[in-house]
Length: 201
Image (cartoon, rainbow, N blue to C red; front, side, top):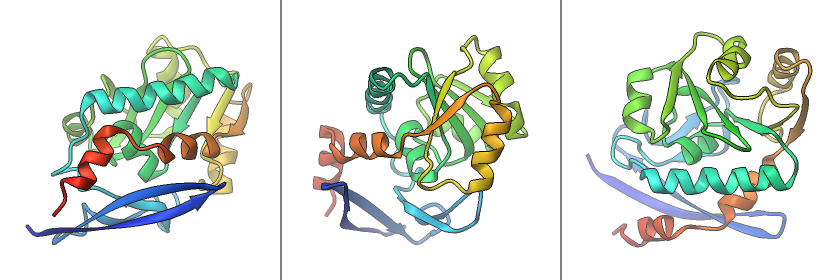
C-alpha cells in the first residue's frame, strides 16, 4: 500500500498548528474522517492511518498529562473527548468511542465499536464496551471515578444536540468549552511528532 503525505498549517488564536496528513490506497482508514455525530467532515479530521501508525504509550500518556494539568489549573474536573482527530490524538484510536479524562486519575475509553481494534490500537489501560452514550455516567462511576461537577467538552465542533444530550446525562454538572485548551496542547509539537514528520520521504 503506497503512502504519501502533506503538511498544512492552521492558525488558531495567533498559534500555528501543523498537521501531518497521510493518504493511502485505503481511504477508509486514512485521509478524511466523518463525524460520528453528524456524518460531516470535521475540523482537523485528517489523521494518520491507525493500521500503520500506532502512537507510543509514552506519547499518549504525555498528552493526557498535559491535558490533566490544564484541567486542574482551570478547575475543571474532567473532559469527554468525542471528535475524531482529538480522540485519535489522546487515545491512539478512532474507533467509535468517547474518552473520559479526569483531572486526576486514569482515563476511561468507552467504545461502541470495535472494542477489539480499540484495544489493539490504543495505549489507554481502561477500555470498556458501551452500547449507548447514556451509559457514560454509570461507567465513569463503576470505574471508581468521581462524577465531574465541571465537565469540559469540545464545544467548537460537537453539534448542539450532542451538547444537550450531555447536559441531560450530567444534569448536576456544569459544562464548559475546552476547545481552546486542546488547541493549546496540540499547537506544541512533541519530539515524537516532529520526528514522525522528518521521517517521511
